[in-house]
Amino acid sequence: MFNNIYEGKKVFLTGHTGFKGSWLALWLTSLGAKVYGYSLAPNTEPSMFNELKIGEKITKSVFGDILDEEKLNKIINDIQPDIVFHLAAQPLVRLSYAEPVMTYKTNVIGSLNVLEAARHCTSVKAFVNVTTDKCYENKEINRGYREDEPMGGYDMYSSSKGCVEILSSSFRRSFLQEDGTMAMATARAGNVIGGGDWALDRLIPDCVRSINQGIDIEIRNPIAVRPWQHVLEPLSGYLLLGQKLLEEGKKYADGFNFGPNEDSVLTVAEVSQMVCDFYGKGKVIVGEKSPLHEAGLLMLNIEKAERVLGWTPTLTARQAIQNTIEWYKHFYSNDVDIYEFTMNQIKSYEEDITWNKSYAIK
Ligand SMILES: NC(=O)c1ccc[n+]([C@@H]2O[C@H](COP(=O)([O-])OP(=O)(O)OC[C@H]3O[C@@H](n4cnc5c(N)ncnc54)[C@H](O)[C@@H]3O)[C@@H](O)[C@H]2O)c1
Image 1 (cartoon, rainbow, N blue to C red):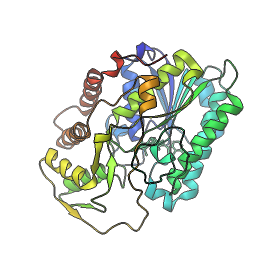
Image 2 (cartoon, rainbow, N blue to C red):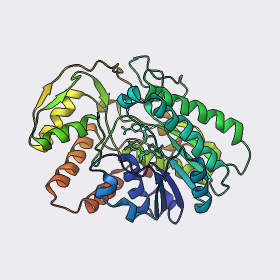
Image 3 (cartoon, rainbow, N blue to C red):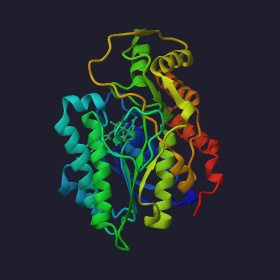
Image 4 (tube, helix red, strand yellow):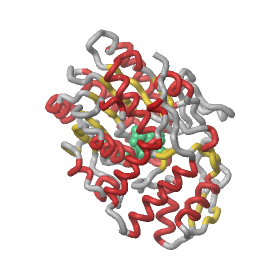
């Protein structure tokens, strides 16, 4: 996988205690990378990080704040990583209404701190900066957004990530033009599902929590349509992008969308019902509509990732939901070693990938 580029590489990963970061930490270790994680301690109970003892599986795990410039600079300089994957963020839309300043500090200033620390550490050759599909100005249009469309965001989370995109583009033009400077790309993906997510206000974790508490699943907006993808889908895109940046540098230093196929769009009601079907229990009821602004459908156009990187999605939304529910069922019934099960999901996903056999344009 990934041309064996990660074998023996030192990877600095922010957000390794979170949902996507935990999966990425495990995938990178299985690819032979030395993973150094830097994040706040996990903030959900349970958390994938604690349940799978990820701190013990990677080379080094440090609990630290990306707003602590001194600590961040010191640790990057001590490690001398080859590549940075920056995933640490405040990623919740609803929390961004309650905590707008913290959201902006973490996402915008925090990202700038990580970029600055990496820029001054000459061992860093590549930087994958994870933003979101919500960075685009959502005009409620009926097609996917292309990478060159305007940034925006209705709520504070989305706009903070739009800011990170603008900041990254400016950072690249200001500091990363010369030979020998790191190649930095941004990666935009949308609603991600998978085992091990216990964040609040996300549909599948909410459904799983209700099922395990024996209460009805209350959904706020049953007809809202969203694209759904398994967590390994964007992670495969980040890893492929990281590979290209390490191998060929600035040619790939740009923004890339990693979204699902168009047929992965399902309503909230459809997804919650599928969760119950795969779980074999649970009941969905429609609750009061949220007073907060709900964005309409936002799709990504993924032609650039297909054409330039040779990346395509692997799983349908149905398969993604099935894999996710299998994970939670095993976790709650405690009938398998959940770490082994997670590693097997990564292996079987690798086997399902077809795009590594095709060639992107040079
Ligand atoms: N989950 C999704 O559906 C989704 C969709 C699009 C984009 N993303 C992006 O992917 C990335 C990871 O998201 P996730 O779903 O794993 O979120 P998560 O909340 O599970 O993890 C966030 C991580 O960031 C760390 N973090 C937060 N504030 C920090 C700080 N000040 N200093 C150091 N670390 C800090 C947390 O400790 C945690 O490790 C984020 O950048 C997010 O915006 C997620």
